Image (cartoon, rainbow, N blue to C red; front, top):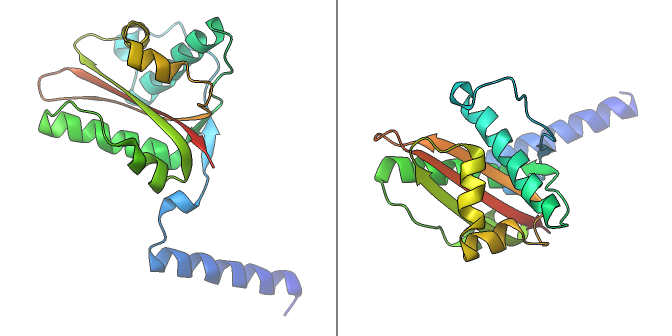
Length: 172
């Protein structure tokens, strides 16, 4: 058997073993780029959740740039999954509270994590960022020089309120 085929089969066996043994997704550092601009032709009310999340990161990066900070260039799959789960939990239970960030650090192999939450009706991504910047604790997280990656969720609760969850992290 050619060496490249042997290595390919070995790699496939290792991946299968890892999946079967339940190694968490946090062991993988899957990222994708944060958009750098918005499609301004779309009305914010017509955007999907994914589009709103992208728009939110564009607004966060505008705020960071206005304060001389580097942009957040990548979403992180593990952190994004935790943000999505937390947003769904808030929508389902109505409990509007921050999670212990040690969970985001531990599960996703991060060295730092900060979380911002917002809930309200008719909130646009710009509204969310403006509210966070007016709150000293949230402002500190959005403008932290430690932040390098993001996980973002925007969902709605049964009362029609938009919930925004942003986890900014620094990966190990």
